[in-house]
Each structure stands twice: as C-alpha cells, then as structure tokens.
Image 1: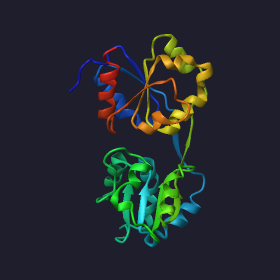
Image 2 (image 1 turned 60 degrees about the vertical axis):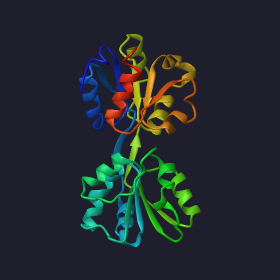
Image 3 (image 1 turned 120 degrees about the horizontal axis):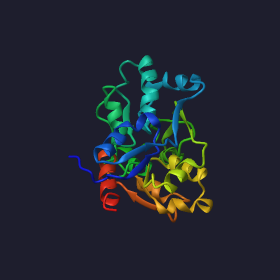
Image 4 (image 1 turned 90 degrees about the vertical axis):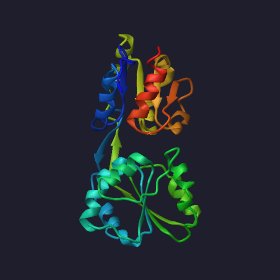
Length: 258
C-alpha cells in the first residue's frame, strides 16, 4: 500500500549506487524524494589468483559462510566455474536473509541463516554453529572484513580460511554536498545500511565540525551500526527487520509524522 506519508521529505540513500534502486522506488511511492548518495562503492579486487586457488579446494571444507550479498554476487560465478554442483559435504551459511536470498538466485537452498539480528554474533549463536572442533570453514567476504567471526570460530576449534572477492571504496570526496542540501532544506534524513558507510560518513563529515548532522535523522537496518563508536549525539532509528519494506515502514513511522 502506498500513500503520501513522506511527501515533501528528502531522503539520502548511502548504499552503493546499484543497490539503491528498489529503496528509492519505495520512497517515491510514498511521496518522498530519494537522493542517491553512495558512501560505498563495491568493486572487484585487483587480483583473483588467491581467491581462485582457495575455491578450487572447496570440497575440503565443511562450511562456507557468505558475509554479504556482495560476497555472493562476486564469488558464486567464479565458484560455479570450478563446481557446477557444490560439494554435498559442505553446508552453507549466510549472515542474513538478503544474503540467503541472493544464494537462492544461484539455486542454493537449505542455508543456515539467523532469524533475529543479522550479524556475526547472531550467526554464531545458532545451534548449527556449535561443536565445530576440527571443522574446516571458509568465509567468503570482501577485503578487510571484521575478524570477530573468524576469531570466535577458531576459539571453538574450527580451522578458518578467507576467500576475499571484492573491495569497498568511498566514492565521495565533496564534503559540502550534503551540507548544502540540508542548508537549502533539501535533506531530511540519511539511510545508512552498513557500519562501513557510517564510518565513511563520519570520516567525510566529522561531528566536531559538522554539528548540523545532529539536526537530521539517520535510519539504519542493524542495531550494531547505531552502537559503533562516534555516533553519539546523532538521531538514529533502527528498522525492525532487514529489507527495504521494513526500512520504509521505519521512515514512515519516525519521519513521516514530522
């Protein structure tokens, strides 16, 4: 159901440009004006030699964990070149339902996935992620991801390797764009759906010299983003579930009434 609950409101989406279309469409359906302002750009890594070497031995692993939809997008075509049918002895896990859905697009079912919070901690808490002594696990991710998941798995006795298949950069260099929009009453909210995008925002616009950021509302899809260092003083709301529909519901509830 659509309405005009966001009419007259300008909402910046900080996702990678090619991942913003659906949310932008939903914002427009509710009368709002989406602003695509990517704070992350996902690009291929420079050299896939190590990645290809690792995935050629995929049948040596008991579990493959995909850390994001990007991990699926960049890894699966290369994996399927070596394994048109994935090893039956290997289970697959996803950090959240959107990542699991991306795996479904490649015909993969029976994926281990959290049902509440969608982060490393929630995945680790699942029954399937216990009793991992001597199990070989491969984590498919981008360059320089969080180490928490690997560290916890190793504490349980697992043998962990990484398969890194993409990298993230911040394409934004202009420090004035968002400020000028806000100053001209053309910016009411920011949607930030990753911890890295939040870090990039605060690197680009440090709060000490950009107090105006406290005058707009930030919407995130994971409580961990709202809890990370540096966000104190920002007006942040957390969507109740992953997915664009839940984000728009959160926007309507906390922004549309203004």
